[in-house]
Length: 602
Image 1 (cartoon, rainbow, N blue to C red):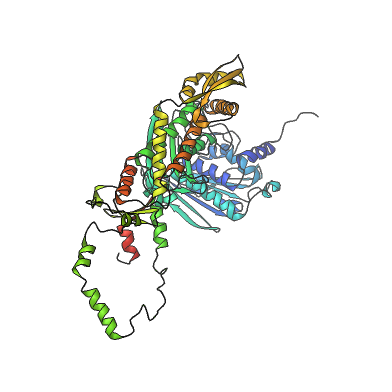
Image 2 (cartoon, helix red, strand yellow):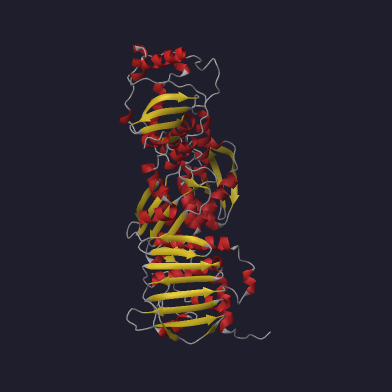
């Protein structure tokens, strides 16, 4: 078949298949154009999930009639010179407007600040009309109607209007977090109005608008740098987690991205603190020289490639773990809310009336009142004693000498007041109370002690009677041998066995009988992809966690007050003690103000 030149309309429709996948893609491109134009207020209106109508209005710099004519032509842009190594704007490809115009009915109305009148241009299914004068405010209004009417096959792949509207809302949320100084308003016939007022430089306030005030109360600030790469933002405490990763927001030089490298780094940073199937909440922003990152990977510009991915991954993991060890050992405020819901007034039902439990004559009732009004001196003294507490069964069986109870205000986790059901420790703090799961708490303490020992000295190794020979590519062998000293400290002794093989001489004794070949291949794959090999460390720590689980204080163990207070003091001194090895919270805190609300006192 003879080669022929495709028409401009068909070329734009092909490009639209990559650039404009759904209404949310069009919304993203138009919002990016508004932000690049310096807008401080952006209003988005939709109908039919964005398929019927998508209108983006901004107060940016606007365009001249000449610029407007070029804007709907393919590969025409004001944001790029002759290089892809210094991209500082959100858009740069010059494909969005002509792609939208090729598959929809596009209208653009604009006016610059100094112009006496505005201008408008329309594109319908790839056919462009001439620019004509039009009344307009300063800025630009882009209106897209009947998206994909020119390519009906694409409409068959669209989701429901509700799903498409939700996708547009998610785009607006991500842009709102990235640009807190811009006011965003999203409205339409298929949704209630969503508004994010500008917060200026207060990024946490904008995050609270988007993610809810709970995020502000449970967020830890992240601020780290390594080799001219800066990482800032906020990450939620481990006990504040979600059932999906939709509340993980990542930005590179202000650009919202959904990059697998960054998402995997967040997952690795929380790997020891969050249960399987749960996801942390985080908003992280990476700032670096544009020459060190390639944003021209995909037309949607949501994927990026870093020149040094190992540096970026290590920075994220190290910064989050450092922040968690510094300020992550607190219970999420949502735990107290769940407790309050469980205690909500109205759930109590009084026991049925019986003659044995209720006074039947006025004389008996009067006697009861006098008893309550005039308690014995002994009982009053007992109740008034600050150290009074509920004795555990163990204490009743084996009395111990009385000791002065610690004062609640002396410690963050307070002083023990009771043990409930031989599993839950109740402690009084200066402004509330704390309930501790004794098994989960002690399990974490034992694991941290074992992990400290694991990393403070070389791991014991067992020699193999016959060395295992692992055939690998020569590059993989080179990468493994570069980390041979690190592996040796962890109990894995390897050496080169020819150009394309590795000999395993020793394996960690803790792991017992194991698949040494599979382990070495896994380490080689990790080094090839991330330039780091954490698989062996993860296996050893997993074994330590399992041993800690079986060796800690069991549920049902009766503990003395001194033991319980000692457990609380260890928790206060141990990083990561707010969660057990499986990521569940070890304690829940209830403030005095919350308790007062339960009784209607505030």
